[in-house]
Image (cartoon, rainbow, N blue to C red):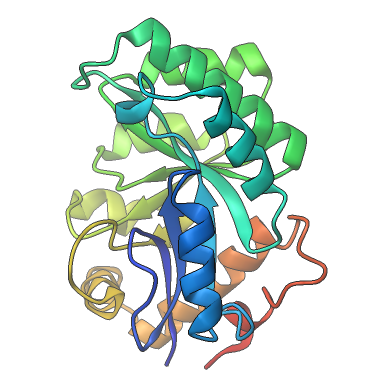
Amino acid sequence: MCFLNFHTHRLSFADETVVCSCQPAEFPLRLEAASAAGRISEGATFFSVGIHPWKAGEISPSDWEGLERALSHPAVVAVGEAGLDACCVVPLAVQQEVFYRQVILSEKMRKPLFLHCVRRVDDVLAVRRRTEARQPWIWHGFRGGPRQMEQLLKQDFYFSFGTRYRPESLKLCPADRMLLETDEAGCSVRSVYEAAAGLRGCSPGQLLHRMRENFHVLFSRCNTEDYQYKNAVTNG
């Protein structure tokens, strides 16, 4: 089986279709490497490109230009990771401006946004209200409890679970709002599927079928007519 990894900073694993997250300056080289390995033509590597809040104080006009160019590429299915982080040394006002601009790009390009949020839930929701965002937001590495998840579901969020999470949240998450990822962990996403399937009382294969459906719902709306995104939902 070819497992779907919705958020990783690695280009590939042998048995995975990945959404690789990178900064705008990194994207050209990563795209070149994935293309050379045949993973672009096979529809095995996709990208999300964005400015992480930790990098928000270092950006230049060329970073914004690079981000817009990247988002126009059909292999790029999402913006991000982008968001707000209370543990970051970058001033909140700077993070908010950078996050706001990326939300606007997400809406303009009609591509979902991978959210990085650390202790800034209210501020994140304020940006969503201010921008009247309609694109899906995917909370990557979600570690919140069921109550927080229930509140965010009302705001049309998706939840991507990695190697660390609250088991009760993963068990209660609606299947059509759930994704699985490895982020920066060195393991294969297969192990994440196996653990999640055990908690939810299903097989990894059944979970993978649901993840393929979620992938299609999230990303088939992107500007990917000339790209092999369908491979990700048909590879078995």
